[in-house]
Structures are given as C-alpha cells and as structure tokens.
Length: 503
Ligand SMILES: NC(=O)c1ccc[n+]([C@@H]2O[C@H](COP(=O)([O-])OP(=O)(O)OC[C@H]3O[C@@H](n4cnc5c(N)ncnc54)[C@H](O)[C@@H]3O)[C@@H](O)[C@H]2O)c1
Image (cartoon, rainbow, N blue to C red; front, top):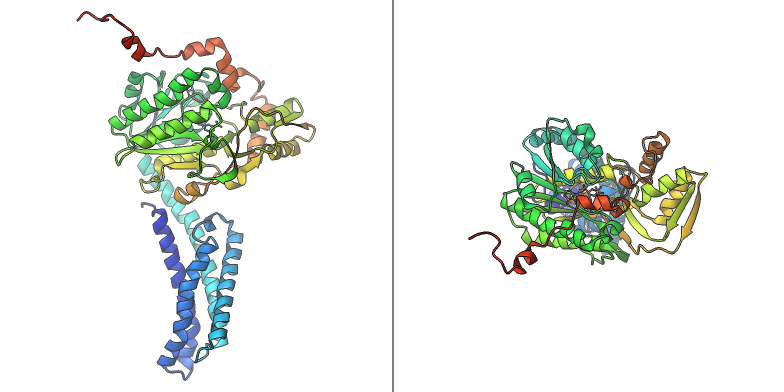
C-alpha cells in the first residue's frame, strides 16, 4: 500500500470533514422530515443556508486552526479539545449569521443544537478512529510490509562504524536488509564487533575517497546511506584540505558512482549546523548561515546532490539535530553526553553560551530516520531535504545544563559566556513529521539517563579517552596517518613535463 502524497492526504481529510458536517446536519433534520408537517420545499429552505455555511466556513476555519497541518502532532487529548473548540466557534458563527439574516422559515433551535452536538461527536470520533487505525492496523501492515520488502533490499552504508552507523546497522539487519559496510574504521572496529558475524553483513574496509573502493562497494546494492566523513566543527578545522577531500569531493564522486550504477535511493547525512547562527525558527527553506568549514562542507555536498538528481536518482538529505545518547560508538565530544559525563564524574556542568539554542536528537532516532528515508516512496521524498528532530527538543544549552543538574543534584552548574562556538539555531520539524510520518521517540532525560547508567555501570570507564572524541582522536599524529591528504593527481599530471609511461 503506497502512502498518499501530503497534498492528497489533506484533500481527503477536508472532504471527510465536509461529509461529517453535512451528515450531522442531515441527521439533525431527520425528525423534521419524519414527524413535522413541513413540506420538502420548506425543509430544503431550512437545510440549504446552513449546509452552505458549514461547507464553506468549516474547512476554512479548520485549516486556520491547524487541523490539516499541525493537528497530527497534538497529543490525542489536546486534539479532542482543539476539535471541540473549532466546532464551537463554527456553530456560534452560524448562530450569529442565522440571527442576523432572520431567514424564513426559522431553523429550529433543537435541530441547530443537535447539529452542533452531532458534528462535535463525529469530528472528534473520526480523529480518534483514525488514530486507532494508524496505531493498530497500519502499524501491523507496515511491519509485515517491511519484512517482505526489506528482503529484496541491499544497502551500502558508508561510514557505518561511527556513532550513528553503529546504531543503524543492527536496525537494518533486524529488519532483514542485506548490508554492506564501507568504512576505514578510523575509530576502530569495536562499535560493530557484535554484528560482524551476521550472515547479512558484509564488511569492506577502505577509504571512500578511492573510486575503486566505492565502485566495488556498490556492486549488487540498490540503496546507499552515506554517513561517513570528518564530523564536527573542531575536527574539521584540524586539516581543511583533508576535510574538503573527505566531506565534499568524495561525496560528489560517491553520488556519481551511485547514479552511474543505477542506484536511485541515496540517503545523505547532513546537519542542522548548516543554519549556523539565527534568531528565527528555521525550516528547510530558511536561509543558511554556516559558521564553520564542517557546515560549509555539508551545504556544498547538499548542492552537489541536488545538482545531479533526476528521475532515476533520488537523494534524500537528512539534516540531523545535535545527537545524544549511547550507541556502539558513543561520542563524548557532543554537548549532552559531555555535560552528563562531567556532571557525574567531575561534579561540574560547564555551560558555554547558555542562551544558545540547539535541536537535540537521540542517536537511535537518527538511525530510525535513515530507515524511514530508505523506505519512503518517491513522492514522499520529493522535497529531498528534511530536518530531523522534534520541536519539543529545541532547547538552550542552559536548559540542558539545568536538566542534567536536576538528574545529578550533587553537581554544580558553571555558566561561561566565553563561547567560541557561535552556533545558535532553533529548528522546525514539520516536514519530516507530515511527509515521512517520522517522530523521535526518545526524550532528552532518557538519553542522559543512558549516559549516566553507562558510566555508573563501568561500561564507559574514561569519558575523556580520545576514542570518544573526534577532535582529540584526529589531533594525534598516528591517527592522521590512517587518513593522509590524497595527492592532488590533477596537478601531478599538469606539472609534469615527462610522459610517465612508455608510449
Ligand atoms: N553526531 C552528530 O551529532 C551529528 C549531527 C548532525 C549530523 N551528523 C552527520 O551524521 C553522519 C554520521 O555522524 P557520526 O556522529 O556517526 O560520525 P562519526 O565520526 O562517529 O563516524 C564517521 C565514520 O566515517 C568513517 N570515515 C571517515 N572518513 C572516512 C574515509 N575517508 N573512508 C572511510 N570511512 C571514513 C569513520 O571511520 C567513522 O566510522 C555524519 O555525516 C555527520 O556529519 C552527525
């Protein structure tokens, strides 16, 4: 069953509301038809103005009140209240109009109140029913569908041994995907050790900047997830040339190889860092304002993908929020994990730039969004770029500090305004919610609790170890030997005056 496109879904919902409003009116007038002495012409005169008013004003008012846009994100109890409130406004407006125009014959008060009551019940009931249907029936169907569909799917995950990748791999394997992993294991293979023997996992160790590695990795695959790269502002600032090679030039080459190999679905991990510093609430159409090479490399990669997309090549760009929580390769160079660890171990929560906003996202929700992007139909991913997160998890760094403090009360908060990180962005997530039906399930408290438990249980012994931090790890000379800046072969050939092979 293909999900309906967003526009079609809205039209169906408007039509359903029109039918419900008119059905409640027809039901309320039924006693008049059966038991009163009124002729059919008189009943028609009663029915017509009210039916017209409800049909024209109803959907307009419901639209303004967010029924067809924000409505789905309301918790069910609030949704019922919003619907009752909208019905109240609609029928009060109808009563005022009827009073003003004093139409003859006068619409019976009892029928008017019955229409109001009936419409409120039907509108609330329909939404409750839709919710039950989505939760129970569709969920079951999707699970069955996923198992059948995924057995045909082979996915290449590039950079899959990292923080997000090690959360994604078990999810894909559990769903029956055949997965090939291309990674140079910069931070080791520990994160994926538990699944190494999985019959559906194939591991290819290699640098994705080399076209031959990429061509070999794509053989027999029908989707690509690209999570690889140098990640984070400080890590990318260490060696700018290396960053551009890995984060931009390689992305272009990988996407072109995928397109050439006939692979259509290409999921690319971008970042909400592209919004940089802004006081507005930002959506996918907002102006970008990168404040680091990392963010610039993401924007440039997005542009490369947008430039080469066509009917046969469908990139899906996921702009992740700031990630937290545990995975096979937990990072402690990310603000939530770092502050939680510092609170527990060092008893101090140092917040730099407490008024700066960030959208937070659990690493397992980031992985779920990748799966949603892989499985979405072509219509749903036609907007291409999706912010990934939830409106409720837009928090200031000060709020994060307070939340951690409440969970580790014997720590102290220390706020500093000497922040070198200028990022400040609050992000809207309506598109991914309404188009892909994706909502994060993790809350920040639960992610912080995970980190605290991992330290208390000894699973993480030293959060300051360089294996947990991209910038610390990449600053060590031996780590960089693994990823040398590649020779610039263009200038090698251009600068040479000799023919290099015997011709
Ligand atoms: N973690 C976050 O908070 C966050 C936020 C927004 C976006 N993202 C994006 O999500 C993606 C995954 O992030 P992450 O936190 O898992 O990163 P990570 O640093 O944990 O993992 C990156 C992986 O890429 C691999 N890699 C790097 N260069 C390579 C090369 N040349 N050849 C082969 N493999 C190479 C590394 O070995 C590593 O396994 C990245 O694209 C990142 O920009 C992450």
